Length: 128
Image (cartoon, rainbow, N blue to C red; front, side, top):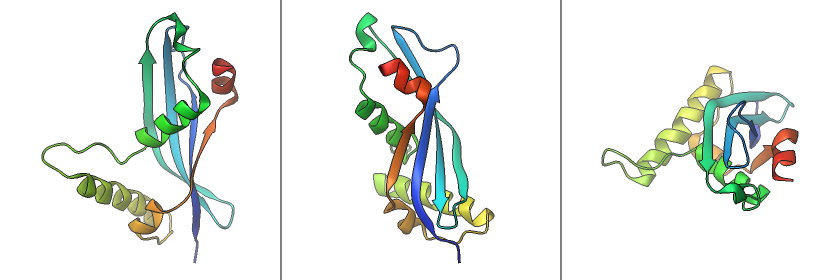
């Protein structure tokens, strides 16, 4: 049986969307398996921030890591749904994606896994 050991969100600068006043970041969530493989769970996430010319000075690695964990879910409630319902749907979807790759894991187990964030070299260079 394949075991999921942790989640990792990889972040990188989005091409063409970054300047002294604007930051655009892409985020890809993967599940790391005990056998060394990884499975992409979400590859369509990211965010942008804009502000005064001091945006760079006010952005830290910790800020980026926190935002990355937020944008890969669970999403904020909408249409009368509760946070619990949104979380259950999110983790259930990720468990389904893993199931399509032959990995049997319960949604509640995914929620409890360590979740690392990796900032790309370009992103680390941007924040200095």
